[in-house]
Length: 599
Image 1 (tube, rainbow, N blue to C red):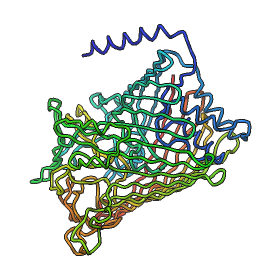
Image 2 (cartoon, one colour):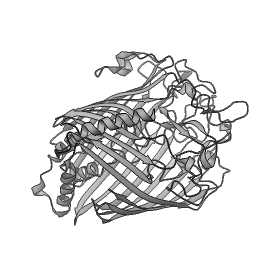
Image 3 (cartoon, rainbow, N blue to C red):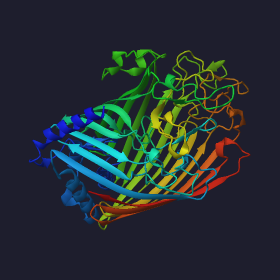
Image 4 (cartoon, helix red, strand yellow):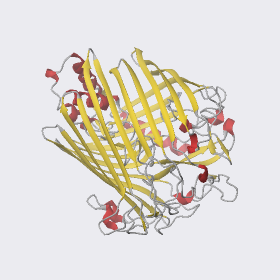
C-alpha cells in the first residue's frame, strides 16, 4: 500500500512539473467556508448596501471574483479600499502548476476546571478549530480547468481513549490544566498521532460560472453566526460531491455527502448495564448507505438589496446498500418520493435584506416535520396523537463599517429549535431503546491507537448535521470587532443558550393531545424527558433547563509576512449541567495562545 501511494504521488509530481513553468490566475481554486477572502467580500457587500453574497460555501475563485466585480472600487473609502485590495490580491495571485506549502503552529491551552470540563465538546476552541503542529499542503493546477488540493496535518488525535462509563474520551481536553499541540509533549505520546487524515483533500474541475468538487471538505449553507439549519460548518469534514452553477443573480448547488450507516454503531449503550459499546476493530465488515443529498437555489433581487435561498434535502438510508437513483435527479422534489422507510426530508427558506448601507437583516426557517391539512395536529384535543412538529427559526442582523485600513463589524442573532427537530423513527412509526432512526445526526468514523489514554480501536463520533446545538434550544449571540485583513484583528463575543432535555439520542415518538399523557406535546425548552434515550439510561433524572453563558475575546497580529501570533480567552458558566437541577453550577476559564508561520 505504501509503495502504491509513493508511486501515485511520484507520477502526479512528474506530470505537474511539465506545467511548472507557467503561471497565471487560478480561478478554479476552492476557498474554504472559513475563508478570510469570503469574509472580506461579505463586509464589503454590507458596507455598500448589498444583500449578502452567496452563503453556500465553499466557493471557487471564479465565483468570488464575480462577487467582487459588483463592488465599485473607485467609490470606496480608505478602509473599504484596503479590504478590496486584500481580496483582489488573494484572488489574482499567480498560481503555479504545482505548489508545496508548510504551515507551522505552536499552540498552548489552559483552563481552570479539570473536573467538569473534560471533553472535546466542553471547549469553545475544540478539535476543529485547533491548528496542527505541522500542515503539509499540496496544490496542483495542471490546466486551466483543473485544481487539486491536499492537506496532511501532523497533530494529536481528537480521541485517544475509551471507557465503559463515558465512551470515547481524550486526555487533551480538560483532565490536565495545560496541554499543547505538540505531538510529544505530555500528556501526548507518539502513539497519539492522528492517522485519520486528510480532513481536506479534493479535486475540482470548473469553468466560467460553474464548479464541480469531489473529495473531503467542509460545507456551510446559510447566513447564521451560531450555525445553520440544513448543514453547518461544525463537522470536521464531509465526504462530498458538489456541483454549483452561478450567474449574475442566480446560483444552483447540488451536493451529496456520505456517512457510516447507524447499523455500524447502534446500539451504542448496553441496556443491561449502561456500558458504552460503540467501539470496534479494523476488521469489521462495513455495510449500509447513509447519504445526505440536497439541492439549493439562490436568487438576488431588487437591485441586489434582497437575497433569497431555498434548500431541500434528505437523509437517505439503506441497510443493504441499495441506492434509489431517483434521488440524484437535480429537479426532483424529495418530499414527493414517499419512501419514508428510507429517507427523512427537510426544507429551509432563507432571506436577507440590506435596507441601508452598513446593515443587513436576515432570517432562516427550517421545516423537518409538520401537519398537512387533515392530518393530526400536535396539541389539538380532536386527535389522540400526532407527529411532533420539527421547526427551527433564526433571525439576526449583521453590520460592517469601513474604518481606517480595516472594517468594524458586528452581529446579533437569535435562534430557536423544536425539541424533535432532526429526530425521527426509521420507518416503523415507533422507536425502541437501542434502535437507530433516520435522523439528521451523523457520525464520523475515527481511529485511535490508544496512546496515553488507552483503548485502541475505531469510534463513531455522532453530531447533528444541521444546527450544531440540535433541537430543544434557544440561542442568543452577539459579537463585534475590528479587522484589518492580512494584518490584525480583535473580536468580542457573548453567547447564551437555554437547552432543554432532548438531545441527539432522544427517542422519537408520537405526542399525545392530552397534556397529561405519557408523551405530551412539548415546547422548547423542555424540563422533562418523557422518552427513553439511546445515550443515557438515566434520562428520567433530567428535570431542568440547562443555561450556558460564554463570554470571550480573541485577537491576532501579523508580526511579519506569514508570521502570526494569536490568543483567545473564554469564560463559561453552565447552570443545571446535564439538565439536572441538583447538579451545581460549573464555570471554567479557557485560554489559548500560539504562534504560526507559513512557508
